[in-house]
Image (tube, rainbow, N blue to C red; front, top):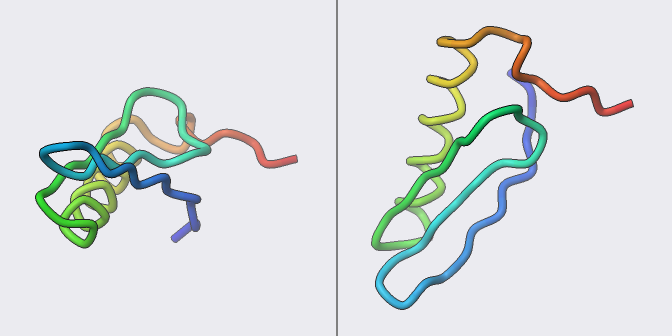
Length: 60
């Protein structure tokens, strides 16, 4: 599994997380930092399984 840098933002009502290095929109959210991180990890896995490795941005 490839590692992704994930940004987690604190909003007034919850946390929102999104990865860098993927084509398309992938977002996770949760009431806590940990919930948002777990949600975005699941979303990343689903996104790659659904759309294939074409969604991976080159890091070179």
